Length: 640
Image (cartoon, rainbow, N blue to C red; front, side, top):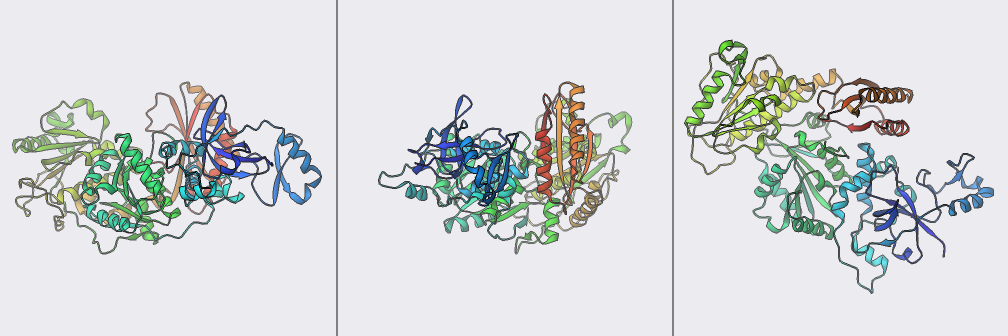
């Protein structure tokens, strides 16, 4: 019987797939997408078949009907037309057949079959975010390790495979190539334009959309930036969806997570609320993908490779599965606003843009404070008066601390909660009477081009929450401060959700600053979100920052400063020699890096008109060919 071979994708930090021989007794059951066990080094690993073929060749040679691999004098692979290879083809194949190609040990029939469309999605993540496909498979491996129903004895292997997954057709050689750029060029189904929903209370619209999708027998994904948002949204959506809604994150029980995986793979209509990991669940036909708080920086994965962005990855998942995508937030990210201007996104129909009320916002100019009283203290004496007044009413105070160093200067006080800016929505409770922004000058002065945008989103989110709180006198306003800045007072937004708590005075928002000329505080004065965000977009365009360009950060670090400097200069030199024609900034020391190492960074700025994927492939090839050890490195595409 003629030998057959397979490319196997292992969930390991490997740059390519490996070729294995399929034993004759396993050949009838082997198919792309099936999980197998095979030796890797001195260990037995579970991998996924991506492509089956008859001629043993390595992954570095393109798989094509018109070319076949040959070996040159240096024992490196090259490709020539088959018509020109007749004299040497038999000899070269004989040499290859004598090479040490290991056998697949077993085919795991009880494990799920990975659909071809899902493999293409994994390859896109690896290609776009410049990380090994094996690390994407590693991130997804836990979602594909459950046991499915074993096929009946009378079923043939082809029937069993069809019953296991309708999405696993036999692959053509060019479709099965592990070259990521090839996988991203495959034709994709057409899908509707993504919708943007700008609203403070979005839960009821989400539920309506999810129920409509489930009633048609489809599946839904709701993507959240953090675990607290997952739990809050899950509890809000639960009534009416009970047994068809799952919350998927690491703190949930293994039984619940396993049930979610099995029901998704079986094709049952249901919805999943989760974070980054939920993007790699075994969906069969996702009809709807919702990205909650699409502007939140928590959607950008920063802890381990792949450093994907949840919103952008969800958009590609929706494109590949022809799913409807809804992006929801109180204010749009600049990327979303830019795409709305270009007509690539659409506004959610029949939902008016909310009007935010700035009546309860007080800006305290600390530059006018008495030096002997409060200049050296993190809390201005006027802010302290508001805090004491709120506590006297029996209500709670929320301190948003934009300066990380302030954490050490505060002692615990009753009815006072401190939080970081991006965790504010974790602590918004009905009994809060005062929200104070402290250290915002430090937050806004950080060398992060997204800092001002993030501050605008944070304020818009809080104002939408405040608008939904019941008050004793909706027309009342907070006392004015003689040194505070006057603000515009647009008509208050209507209360969209009532909470069963006693009516009280309105929630007051207090912002301390010594730099009242910053655009953020001008935004608080005018209350005009659209014009403020348009100004930010113009500034981004002027300085060539996203969304008008793409950024790639290459960071190198080592505990020895000389080694780190030498390696980053060596890499910089090799990237310049590659001749991509793209501006490279650096090397420079990153402003925010939590590692106790000497760290240096290079920054690529890619214009929108450039062929981004070709440049990324060049960068990946240069990094692979440059000896950076013993230093370590990380490539971050679209950094947050």
